[in-house]
Image (cartoon, rainbow, N blue to C red; front, side, top):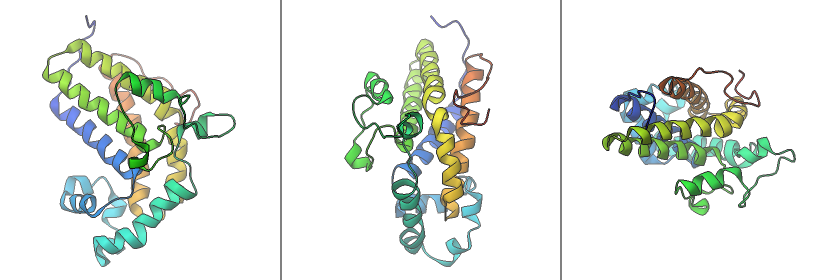
Length: 227
């Protein structure tokens, strides 16, 4: 039986779910014309990417040229060639990517029936930043079902799982990657994406702690988030 009173509005959950969906989509593979079309047609969504919104090349070229000439090149640079978007690279002493069963996220994914199709996602390990953000999205989706079922204990449990995953995984390494991503980005879309992901994860961690009635101290043991 839950010992705390957790009140989660539909709007709060929709906003969290949407943001995790957006940032995980941006980081797991290159954008496609459908994503760019949705971004262009949604003023609220576009407002999350202020530098992209005012980008002169966005006004000069259509989505196909933007994608092929600029965005795909930037994605390749940030996620496939020059930076390493994997947790184990940042947390292992030897900076090796752990793609096998010893990866620390695997046990949690399996326990919650979260399956990662590595080939489809074009990642070499389940601790890719896009996959970990997608896992947070999945947990938000599960919370939506718990709310519909009026499962207070389930809502509380999911908040604790989300808190733990942010604290032990994403916030323990992703800020280091995102700082480098922002610095190395060649297009406003990925510059804004890095900033959005950083700000949202930190604010969401605070939000979850508030819902659980907990005080927020340092959000990560490594100091990666600068706290």
